[in-house]
Length: 202
Image (cartoon, rainbow, N blue to C red; front, side):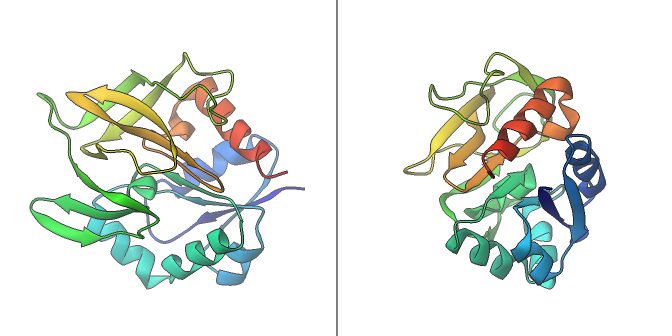
């Protein structure tokens, strides 16, 4: 049976992600054990809160090395919400620049919109060759965030959304994929997206 490690490092939404994956029939381990993370068929890095605080939590459990090891070995990783943001090189919150995991160039910064945070359902614009959004390209997904990347990393497939301006809603980059929205809170469409990701693990 497919085994998924959901990285447990103190972030608030790990259990909801684990439950959403369990409903799809996979075995889910909530763990920060390096060997369990390395051995899983897929790793999910969830995240809520501030970029710098999440990075501090990740470093405390040695997550940067775990993510690096998996990607170097061609092992799939899925980032969700701030778990996507920290894949970028830097985050800027309240004028404080914090280093991310640096898997992609780019800066995560505050949304420039009349109402922040961006909270609720929104349409996305996936690329034509998307895998994550196969069969659900016209669906809406649930966002809760005040910060986002506004420029696309090179050599990646980008899904866009808009709140005040266009921002990166998802990235598909080989074995590293990520969403700014919460698939575990996005109903049937979110469940299908997670199922599409699980199909890439075969």
